[in-house]
Image (cartoon, rainbow, N blue to C red):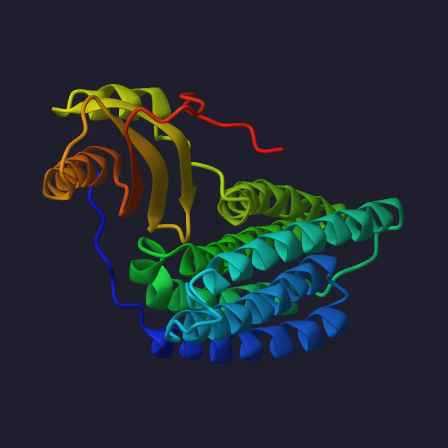
Length: 298
C-alpha cells in the first residue's frame, strides 16, 4: 500500500475556472430565454462548479505554504476542508433543484427546444475540456477529486439535458424537462454524500477504513523484544498522509540504540504493509498503565 506524491497543476485548475464561468453565464441567459428549468439547473450546478474550483484553487495554494511554529502542519488540511465544503454545496444545490423541478412538474411550461439543444451541446464541449484538464490530478488528490466530480457530473447532466431537448422537440412533452432535473439532482446527491463522508472522516481524524488495528498489533508484537503496542491513535492528515502514534512496551530494559533499531523495523512494517507514512512511538518498560489498544480519554 505504498504512496507517492504527485505534482498538481494549478494552471489546469485555472483554465477550468475560466471555462465554467463562461458556461454559467451562457446557460443562465439561454435558460431564461428558452424557459428551460433543466438548463437553469445545469447553470446553477455550473455556478457551484465555479465556486468549487475557486475554493479548490485557493486550498491548493494554501496547502503548499510552509510549516511554522504556530501552524506545525502548515495548511495541509486546507484541501480536505475545501472538498468538504464542495461536497456540501453539491448536496444543497441538488436539494434546491428537486424543489424547483417539483414545482415545474405541477405547472409545465413550453420550452424553446432548439435553444436547449444548442446550449447543452456547448456545455458538454466546455465541460469535457475541463474534465480532461483535471482527470490526472483527480487520481492523486481529494481536493482535485471534488472539483473533478463536480465537472464530470455537470458534463453528464448536459448530456441528459441534450437528450431531453431532443425528446421534447419531437414529442412536445415538456414535463421531461422537470423529470430530467430531478434525476440530475438525485445523481448529484449520491456523488456529494460519498465525497462528504470521505472528507468528514479525515477532518474528524478517523482511522482509514482499510487499516486493521488488531492486525497492526499482531504484526508489531512479532518484532524481537516488543511485548505489546497500545494507546494507539491513527488518523489521516490529508487523503494520502496517514499518521500513527502509540506506546511500545518492551520485554526487557534495552539501551536507546536498540530501541532505535526496533523503531526502524516497526516503522518499515507500518509503512510497507499498512500505508502509514508518519510514526511516533513512545517506549515503555515495566510501566503500570493500561495496555488496551484504544484508551478512552475522559
